[in-house]
Length: 75
Image (cartoon, rainbow, N blue to C red):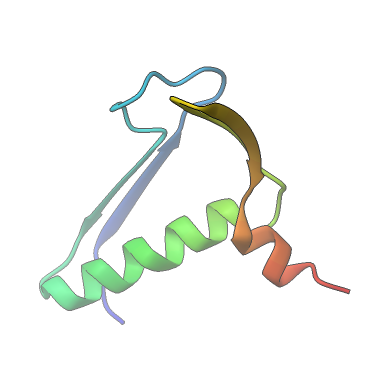
């Protein structure tokens, strides 16, 4: 994989619907390398820590934990 530069920003707290919570930018000569780098980055941001989010629906709400953390830390 060959990419030039990468920037990652992650918001915390309440994030309104429709707004991004993670921003990843990658520069690369080849698009496929940039997409692979983005996938790797988001997996690495999410996997080491439990991220809880509250999803609100018309008929209720639910707390969900990120599957990347659960998969990597299954015992």
